[in-house]
Length: 378
Ligand code: SF4
Ligand code: SF4
View 1 (tube, protein in one colour):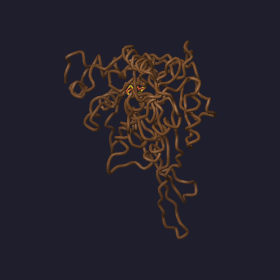
View 2: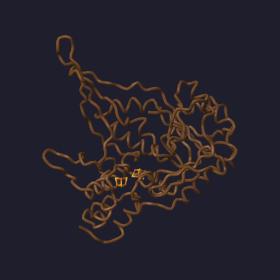
View 3: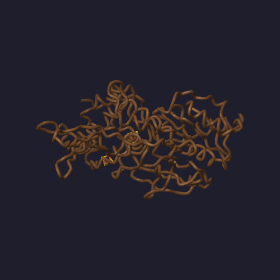
View 4: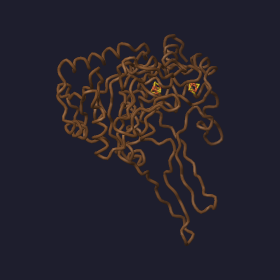
């Protein structure tokens, strides 16, 4: 974890002038953090290691719509005007592919088992969104359950230092205001920045964050700057055009398991699994053993998996989800309905990634609206 939460109040915020953003990165690097920030790769924004303290790009935006993600220029040349990219923090804590343990024969021919734990540097991620923080809290709830703590996840997670930013301009696919997870970061960060024209209103959320904030020696943010930051968050929330009708759709969806809309969406869905790959809360995975060619050792490997895959529904002798209708229904009802039974809230943080990255332009907010507006019941 990122040390104890202390969440400083807005009136305790510091103000980081725009020209001094690199000072924050310099400080984090000096503390031994590998610093990751937004980087353009294959036409999208991803988090990659920064070469230098002044390596954060300016003026990037991402236009998003169902099945569409396109980088554009921000006319205001801000650092964090882009809403999000195809991946949140998930791959940095829950690795897409890793060995969990290995087994090999010793000189006497006996099998020796040993865990394979990842080498994890301390990593600071700059540009984390409120929805990403909410998604990470859900991943924590899954992987760090008492009695079932996942050592690989825990080791990476403990090394993260999270610098969150308020979304000034949510993407057209975002609906975090309706899920209650954004666009202003309120929990889960070490530091939180709100970008204004002249600089950043900066708050600490943990002891570690407060130490970095103190070390920066910032002037206090003025009441006008704090008010501008608050208003920017409100305006961003009000600008979102998509929404879910409720934060708890459990009964509404579970009472419509035979709704004809599941058949309709199944004719469009390609079962490609893009939505689960980009979703920051999906945690399904598959495990397999990869033997060495000489037969003397084997790795037990975990890889991300998707409930849209045909093999994901295999039980002994039959498949519980043999068609796309049942797989789409499983995904949506787990995410928005039965997640409440497991983790006490919905599994959707409103990031909109599954909408932008769906090649069939399927929009879960539209599907939920269609499923819940009619009175068709089982
Ligand atoms: S909903 Fe879209 S992204 Fe998800 S499996 Fe179907 S086609 Fe792929
Ligand atoms: S279901 Fe879609 S909108 Fe919700 S958290 Fe996952 S990717 Fe984001």
